[in-house]
Amino acid sequence: MNRLLVMFSALILLSGMTVCNALPVIKGEAGHESNETFISPQSKNKKVKVKKPVSAKRAQKLQAKKEKKLKRDSENFVKENRKRSLEIQTSGVRERMKQNVKDANTRYKDKKKTNTSRSKKAGRKYK
Image 1 (cartoon, rainbow, N blue to C red):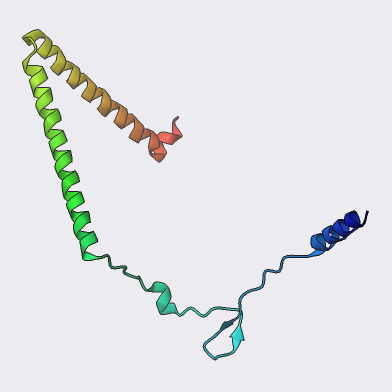
Image 2 (image 1 turned 135 degrees about the horizontal axis):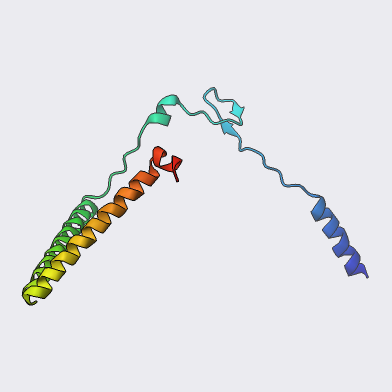
């Protein structure tokens, strides 16, 4: 019974407390205590440059160079592979493949054109 009474009174005390959100005390320019921080106008507009170590810059440049080379090699591989796949086909199939590419390009252009006309204000008017 005693333990229950102590727990109940502790619960009432804890629930009655409020959280205080006080600002920290900061000494201003004049040396007096104030609750506001002073920020000069020059420090607001000043851009801070963070210098990276030279080794980090070098590593980033090397990584960018490697990625560029990989991308170029990948594009060349795809290009050569397309040429090869056209060469090994018979003439009839080759003509059909070329025509399919042309048709796909025209469909893509038409689709792109309709999407851009929809996004314009005038295009939205007539939806």
